[in-house]
Amino acid sequence: MTGRIWKLLGSMRFAIYLLVITALLSLVSMLVQEFLPQGIARSNLINIFGLNDPFRSWWFRSLLAVLSVSLSVCIIQRGPQMIKQAFERRFITDPALLKSMTGYIRFESADGVEEVRRRFKRLRLSVRTDSSEKLTALTGMSGGLSRIGPLLNHLGMLLLILGGLALSITGSSDTVSGAAGDTLRMPEWDFALRIDDFRIIYHPLSPNQWVEIPGGRRGKVLQIEADSAEVEISSHKEHKHSHWFPLGDLKNDFMAVQSGRSTPYQGNVSSYLTSATMIVDDSMFFEHRIEVNHPLRFHGFRFYQSSFETGGVITEVDTVTLKVQSETHGETTVKLVVDGNEVILPWGDFSLSAGKLFPDFRLDRNMQPHSASGQLVNPAVKVKVRRDCEEIGERWVFTYPFGGMREDELLINMQIVDLNVVKTTPAGYITVLNVRKDSGQWLIWMGFIFATIGLLFAYGMTHRRAWAVVERQPDSRDVVHLVIKNPRGMSLRPM
Figure 1 (cartoon, one colour):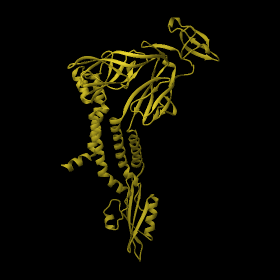
Figure 2: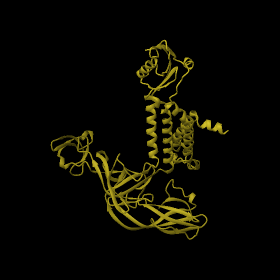
Figure 3: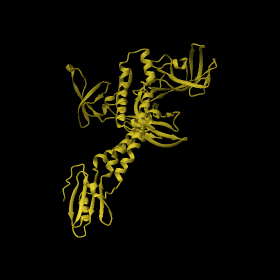
Figure 4: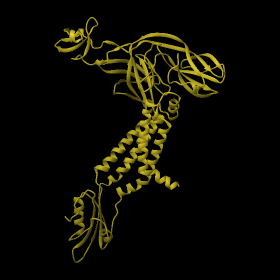
């Protein structure tokens, strides 16, 4: 039974089936939420199979684990043989054995050993000899590394899968935001990130851009000559007219109203740039610019410029009052210090502690929470719940129920009823950074390198092997028995 399992795991067909199943299930998991009917069945299915984050679900990790075991068994079974074929120099001393091989050639030569050497060198084969009293055996080989190409491909694939498994288990993605002067910290960081500045970089003024002209009206640039530009004022077909304005009177960095918020007009934006300083042990470590497609990498974390929000004001809150309800114990209120110690509820068996607080809670496109502004628009606090000294979970708590944030697993319902605002200060733009930790990233890079080298070895080299036995005849010409293993169709006729 054990032998059958070992053989199954080492089968390439089994590994291919696993790859296909993993790919199909991953595709289905990404689509199922779009088509599955709403209700309890949908909720249970999503929770059981982890469809909110399928690439960190139990079934995805299990498939990757089995696939990595299968590839490991395959490498163990075939690796030694591939390495042996790549580097072994085996002599054949029996002419009868050569005669039974495909491509056998027999000829006579005045100096058989040198003749074979010349032929091997013309084929770019490395040559080794083994001589005895009556005969000399020669072996030649080239492209031996092509035999370990598949082995490197298997190893590269294994590292890629292990890297994906590490990402699934230990990888994380979070969103942080802050205005200039804010110092950002996370519990898992051993450093702090200070936001020094955030700037929006605009394209130089050019034709077809929308601009703001004196008086607050908007228009489209038609052409630019010297120090002035022609601007089309109205977009109505019947009332189109244009005027020339000095370039200094035109603004392409004007504000526009989008989704009820005043925000810079995005059509003229070239890039977003955050200037930040890393702080380690209360000492400045280094300054860095975080720009779109140019992330900051530090201590295993990567900081991406995700987006920005208009500032308004920054609100600082020190305590939050929650209304807590339990079917067993009834209702009570509790005041928690933000990022403070836990507080035991009057019931005795429950305790709560407040973590980070977002004044304007939002979810980005990666479903990661962040604060869209510093104003108390949609305040939310992350509350950790413990029961009988054992942590049972944590949830974002709002001033009203928020869709998707289930409370039943915590056995209690919570709602914000009051916030103690310490102060509000004016703020400029707020930068939004996506923070990722990919602990398996180096495994993925190593897998990519091994797989690439394996492909170069397997398809960029040709493995050729040749054997010869030269029978020395004292009174006549040497008799040469020759076989060249040639997969690429090279001529085997005597030269």
